[in-house]
Length: 285
Length: 248
Image (cartoon, rainbow over all chains, first blue to last red; front, side, top):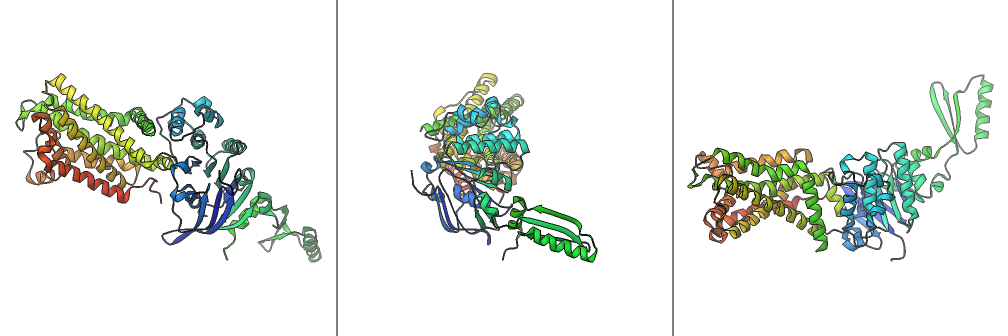
């Protein structure tokens, strides 16, 4: 197979009716890697993924998926990718096994259908009609159908949006299982914890631009570590600092000298969530 | 070929498994025939009533299966994201379209046989004068109706509205084209509408084949009108058809 990155994106741009949804982003995904595209709704994640899946044409930039241009992809190319869309139904009157068989028939070398059904945890539902499945079970079915062709690369567009916590954990286990099969995975999510749990590397997108890229650990490197909050004359004051001891001593020293209380004083470590929210909330310059 | 066979089998499984639509598409026209056959007797337009009704219902069945049924199915699959999902698989779109068409034609051929058999067995209909001409005419008609069906599906925006919009087109057309009896007593303006509808010409061709055993080659003008409507539908589809839901 082709050497080099599984996905390569350079200067990708896409506008809808003059509004730029994606404004020149670059990234690579290595074979075997789980790569997360993280960002709020409307940041351009789905547009990017749909260009990589071959659903949309780009306005500018270079895109290579498994060595091919997805917009001009052949059947042979589609043999190698699996897709889980954000919203898509499957034939409601067919059974879980029948839907897997239907999709397996489109591929030259499918995985055994029952093995895939087992893998996504639907073995006891193999003969149930699709319309009788719960939301979480339908999502597993989407995943099974994406895997039945035994793809090298799997796209997961917001695989757990709308899940309850236990369904989400099950889905996470599934993605980890995929990774252990050696699949390259590109997933989009607007949940930071999901990206942290699953992704080897994460790219944060905001308003169509890639504002940070790295391992989940690197993402928060350099961020202020501690946040001090208190109230002064009815206004909330928030100080972020890497030197909490000095800042606190100054604050309390001044307050003691003036004989007043630091109302609602709170000192806490900034969580990943805070860092992420700061990142995506920053006004673009 | 194996891919085509696989997809045709899948289409058939989906069609017959969906009871509501199978009843509407497959059972409804023969059922109408049974009701009308119990009401009419004597002649319609100089043809024994039951044979004229078989002819009319074959025309209606053709529009109901290949236009209405196909359009509703495509809109529901498009809006549900099934078509979009299929586009990401190695299944070539032309194979998919061919299988959907073949499946539709298969259902319609079975329906045609059932309608003719009901007429012959229950109401002493004469049966077709020329089976070959009848099947050829109906296959051409079904392909033209399918062209209109794909065109109409491209114009419908939501799955909820699909059935209503499609029947608003197909039922009046069937009525005006004489699917359910003679149009001779209709006011002139309705007959003027009838004179441009593809189903009017298709029913003429079916009557020629069924009653008189005439080949469609004897009335190429009527064939041209039917085919032209199918081409119009296809042209709309080429401009407007989308695999993805109409969200954006």
